[in-house]
Length: 418
Ligand SMILES: [Zn+2]
Image (cartoon, rainbow, N blue to C red; front, side, top):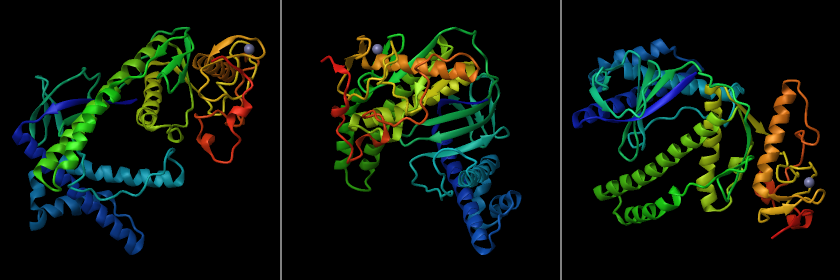
């Protein structure tokens, strides 16, 4: 499987200039090729073969006065740029034909000098790792790297990125064999929530990380400063970098935190079960949106890739599963409850439930039932996953706030405790 390893790099002033030149040339080659392909398509619906395209926008272009400066940068970076355009087209066509899942991918667009993120890629021919830990890039030189961890194998390519806050990163693609961890018999269900980050079926809780709120004040101040600067001034550009740096710090610490949480969960459990959340439909309140929209999707993505890498199982319980309505003790379905109700007593067996913990236990039971079922094993009665159930729970479903629906409080059949 392919993994990405990303770390900060610290090019010197002259290396930064060389990188800026290469960013520019790679962009021009990309845009020239895109213009040619668009024109060919418009003229006679034809596709220029990649080889011919490379010849006209790199080899031949270098010989013209207008593009002679292409000769001053690594040809490998320019060829990689063309391959990226190929990939962009392939993604578009695959998305259109339904071969590619997920959100629809649009046609490739022209890149701009003013894009806040600049990037370029080197293939295996364009870079080398030095014995002293430096990264040698073709026509740029030996760049200092801060290695956060050693690479597990020889990388097949490296992407150099300059982000809007002015930091440089190298992102290596490494092909690794999945290394399976020793098998465990622990399984866990996770309920991702709004009040706490997550509640586990064993009763442990992951609290909401507070970096965003802590950083919010600093962000606001930086933002205010930016809005006071005159348009197009140097001070404005400086203030903009400051805002970008504040955002980048938050994103970094969130990612770091998420890696730690997901690594621990995958390390400690043979199977992890999550609810399929409709992340895009969730935005409830400003903070919930900013913290969770990015957070939950990333959390799930990290869990899934780490499970694949270490030989663990991830089960996603369908969105329609009424995790908050079932009693995890007796399986009685108690009906939907408004989000404000944190605790309730089962009307059949009388057990007092914490809403999130009960949901996590139901997710565990449903995920386990589904897994055993898939293997031909027994299914615990009462917790089979209803595939066609109505999405009814307030707040965690896309159409929860759709106007014209009955007020939810009227449906409550469980006994609210508080
Ligand atoms: Zn019960």
